[in-house]
Image 1 (tube, helix red, strand yellow):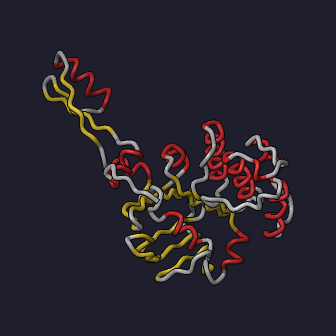
Image 2 (cartoon, one colour):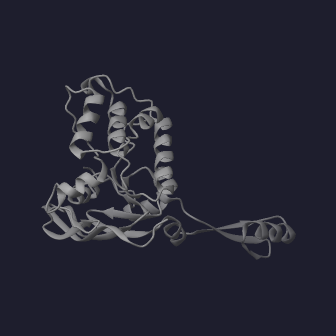
Length: 277
């Protein structure tokens, strides 16, 4: 569980691409040992925020820090301490998967034992073929292994299960759950509600470049309780029903409240609108 120390800090981050595109005054923090879910559709600003955290972009206003380091000015140090999975992975297509993993290890100057074999077994990855001949899912597995194989304490994951089949999506969730138990600090952008609900302590919802909600998953769900009234055949049945489901009984009618799913909460902020990239 998070211990209170702020590992990832985004403060008033702004980058305006025009036409309402970009990120605008985005601020949030991720504590040590916390898994933070960053929710929003394509084009909402998730990847733009992450590119600032990785030091690929310089903030127009505000800024980002990881472990106290300025993400742009100290980007080389920041990048070497992280595990990073981009939303769109850039590979050297003429490399094999194993050559790419060796290249990433060399860039990071990895020392000591690697988890590479364990992760390849977990995701049924045969890394010896040419990357250009790999499927989308197989390339995603290579990216996952590259992000986790040096056992980083901080991970930034942008749409990590894109292209994976349901079995591999579940294995990825199990991996993140295990990393969470080890006290890793993880920021994970996603639009997959199940993986966010199962793995994240808190979530932030971004819409049109602005952070519109941020809280623990259960707290957000409780904000959108839905009341239902049921009428039964007798007052005795109504009282029994109210007792079983913590409802309020009035004669033969019982009113109970149910939490919304995370997806339903998300749609409260998006209202069913489509947001294209």
